Image: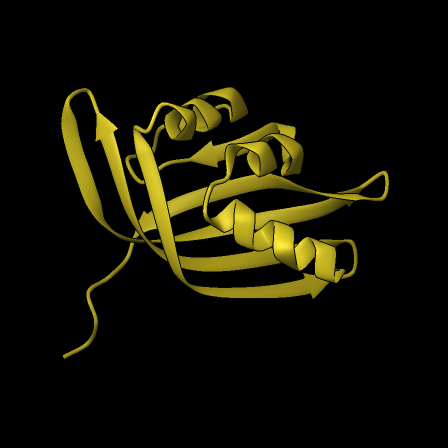
Length: 117
């Protein structure tokens, strides 16, 4: 992955909506921590409206030919039906090179386990 891809990854992790529009595949599969499957448009609207925010703290990306898997730890806030949910989450994003461009085709969020004591 190029250095341009690395800069884009940082913007994507911070949920810059311009970057989400560019790098999420049109048919991306997004599964939130509550198990709800949402669309690209719904995810972008969550960040555009301010209902969601993300502050990444750890990012690991591994490339496998024309596929890459990104593992992210982040603190998030999400307002869902007047209820604010916040905390640390892990998410896995699967990137695939399509027609010479990298696209996120799958993205799943899971609540992070508390640190070991």
